Image (cartoon, rainbow, N blue to C red; front, top):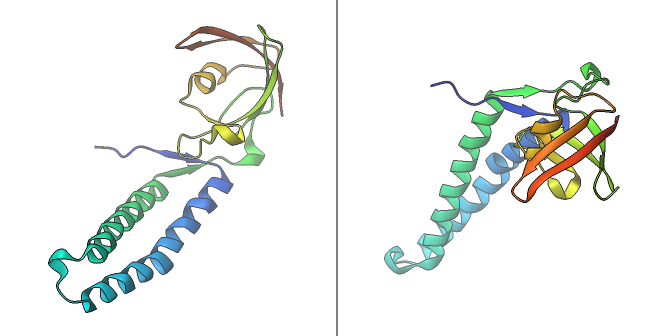
Length: 157
C-alpha cells in the first residue's frame, strides 16, 4: 500500500524536522530518566510515576514514527515556483464573502500544516478544495454543512 504524500511548505518541513529532533534528543532522554527514577522507588506494579512515564514514552515513540513517515513522504511546495495566476498549494489568497462583504486572507497548505487560527487552511478543507485551480476574479461556491457560501477570489498574493 502506498503511503500518503505529506504536502508541506518549507516552514512546515522545518517545524516537523525540529519537532522530530527534539523528541529524539531531549524528550526521549527526559522520559528515560523519569522511568529510571520511578524504578528506583521500588515496586513498579503499583507505581503511578512509572506508569505515566511508560505511557509518555509510548506516545513519544509513536510520534517519532509518525513524523519520520511524514518526512519520508514529504513533498515540499517551492515558494518561488508558485503560480500567481491560479490558486494552488502554497498560495495566499484574499477572498471576499459575497453575502457579508467580509474579506479574509488564507494560505493553502497540506493537512499536516493546517492551522485555521493562523489562517492556514488545508487543501482538503471545504474552502481549500473549492478555490484550488481558480483565478483572481472567479466566484466560487463552497459547500459547508450550513449550506453554500459564495466567495470572490480578490487576489492571489
